Image 1 (spheres, rainbow, N blue to C red):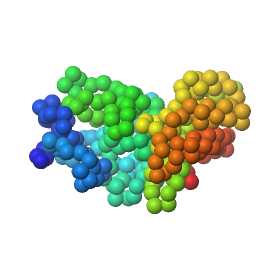
Image 2 (image 1 turned 60 degrees about the vertical axis):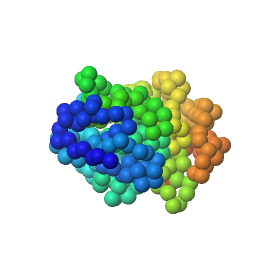
Image 3 (image 1 turned 120 degrees about the vertical axis):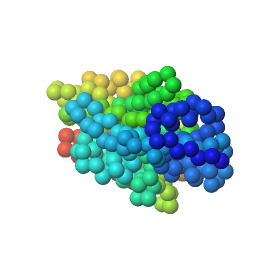
Length: 290
């Protein structure tokens, strides 16, 4: 198997365009190497991005936070700037695997792996994340929910490359929360994860509510119609119970060693209500492993 190491995005795109659909991109390699060792994938070749400079950065202004594709999870976790702007995300990153993995795994690799049991995608989705992609036809911005389409499957064309993750800078008063429930002590992957964000207006009513479920379905699960209903509602126990009940009734979770579908449905209801209830006026944004 041939391993190609381009030194620029332009060269990487040319190699991708000339390759067949069985070629794989490798950045940190924390997921792909496991798949290779276990005989789960059989790529015709690898295009390694480790020699490309200029894709490892964190830049923030009043409008948005831009993170280069090759920025590692560990760099993001330890960034003082991100800790101030996105504390829930940075704390959740500290719960991903271990130090060695986070020192290698990249943010673009994480989202493009489309792993249903990964923590960051659900949180990034509540934050309004988009992924900037470059290809032969130019570049495009893809909202994260449109990038993730199924288990380990994205909407990227085989000759496109994710080069940047873009997150709107949270407005004042935005609260976020992530609850990660792990059902097996030997694992760090969630049975169910609940990412939630809440913005309120000057009147104290809900301006925007977002809830995403990780670890239970092919892609982060949400019910946009229910969330829309809650705009303008009072952030009350009744509102949170309505969202939690709706999610538990609508979700169709997987059934595996981490929990049955019925168990995950019950956990979803409990954690959604708890994640929302915890975001009161005194709440400090963060992530909790349960």
